Image (cartoon, rainbow over all chains, first blue to last red; front, side):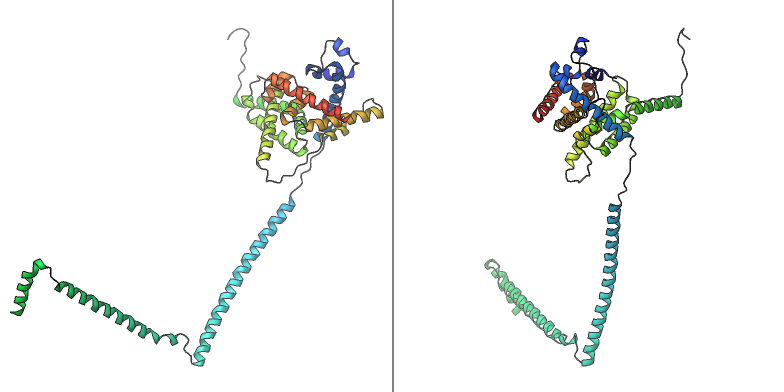
Length: 169
Length: 191
């Protein structure tokens, strides 16, 4: 039995006469307060001790967290299913699309309408037009070059006349 | 060989075995007390169990560095207090995490009050008082509660509490005085 138990169990004043001090008295409480509060604190301590001992000795049960596992499993399956379905749908769609394209081409060939060649005759005209534009630009540039080369600065005039004389000769 | 001294040769394996035995004895002696403190402090049986395990695991890892400057109990209590602090700090930081808590009210502890040789009326009154103390303790700040529980549940000396909490003795006294004052006020208010 501890000093605290001993004191709390003894009549009021006996502890003081015996020269013993309770923890409450040490903490600055007077005798009456210490007795009243001391009794409550002593009971509180006994309750905590009894409670903790009871909890301490009772067998512990470990609850397996199956719920989380189930969720994880379900999520995994769902993701797997989505991937498989997506792969299958993609394959089927691409197959159907290819079939449809082939069928359309066959249909166009059967009706005699050239599906893609109808546009082709326009191509030479466009190329020709581009060629013509290109030629015109080149002619213009050549003309500009020759005009520029014919314009001679005033300082070079005698030399130009000399060259012109040579050309005429 | 010097007179009166007998050197017993001891190999490493024997020293380790002795240390393990010593530690086992310490665990057996103090485990309930550490668990009790953590239970009354956290009010959560599972958490108290976990923190007790952690406390002894940490103590085991550092057993070789324990020099016996304080008692093993004080040393273990210091580890337990630090673990508890870390736990609450982590909980505050991880506020978005929904963790299951099994905390119970401390006033439920009054249900465990031994009947002794009291009459039914006295027993009822005592339970009520214990419940009031429990509620008051719950409302204390973390440090005040720790000091209060170490003093009035674990019956530690002020100097031991100071060593275990890392506070000065004067600070411990001040916290204790405030804690007791608040408990007394709570009890007075409920009467």
